[in-house]
Image 1 (spheres, rainbow, N blue to C red):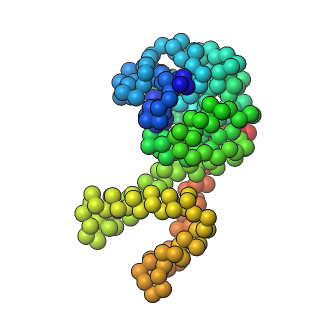
Image 2: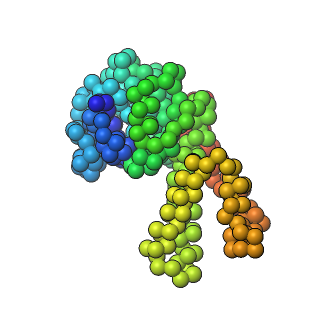
Length: 257
Ligand SMILES: NC(=O)C1=CN([C@@H]2O[C@H](COP(=O)(O)OP(=O)(O)OC[C@H]3O[C@@H](n4cnc5c(N)ncnc54)[C@H](O)[C@@H]3O)[C@@H](O)[C@H]2O)C=CC1
Ligand SMILES: O=C(O)[C@@H]1CCC=N1
């Protein structure tokens, strides 16, 4: 049983808690200053609390508050060297957190799919932490990266779900405009993204080969692909990712990472 506390139970904290609760094997304490946030997540926790002292003894403490709240929490959070503090805040470096805590600091960039144990996460640490590895495996897929790559990971897998939701909506809306029932279009659009993503994860083939596999000569797909090939959609999607990466750098301020 892994004893984990989550500080901040908003969108991301509650997604992590729900995923860990579904995985099993975790004793979960949820801490927030907002009793309503705690009430909303209470079914997935062993304990909810508005007393920061209650997280003091957890093996893993996940800091899931907004970046500007991180220093406020750290001021009152008293942890020991044998504990691990996992920070998920965009643009907040490990060094900045480590300067304010006695615990070993690991930085991850998670995403909302933690809730369904299909999270994509990036992790950076000085030394691999087996308990954090276990947690990340239970929640989905993860990659280990140097911390100086955390800004681009934040854009890709942290912000990425919003970009994908947007694309799902675009496909869904056009299918509805062309006659499909809205609920059916939502299911088909979302399952198509899920299936395509699963295919990429399980296949050794590169993405061009996978595109070719869908395009029958003289068929329907190539007609749609020609529209994409002739457009600047690659640049637009890339620009969205770069804008998010730049914002992560801005949030870091004077921090180099
Ligand atoms: N939302 C997302 O998809 C992702 C968010 N993140 C990071 O996760 C962190 C949290 O983001 P969200 O969950 O979206 O924010 P949120 O605003 O949904 O949740 C923040 C929670 O912190 C609580 N809080 C505020 N002050 C507090 C304090 N002093 N002590 C304890 N709790 C306090 C709030 O009541 C709220 O429940 C941010 O640092 C963000 O960069 C990282 C990856 C993805
Ligand atoms: O928008 C944000 O700043 C956070 C970090 C990555 C996803 N959400």
